[in-house]
Length: 92
Picture: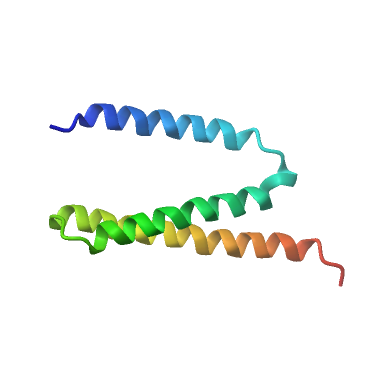
């Protein structure tokens, strides 16, 4: 049987560690950081496609579809933000 409290604990701990790491990043590094998060989200997209398309129970497939939507939203918005930031540094 799966220990859900352990999974919740790891999720909460990872959230706080992630927030702590992101807060300490210099503003000059946001564009490379967005590129890195896009790469990580691409891995999440592949995993969520596998889960959403496999022969799992409906609940798990639905969670995979939600994860796919969230990851794709993160990737698209990351590219839009990165493009906007790069346009700020171009000379007109």
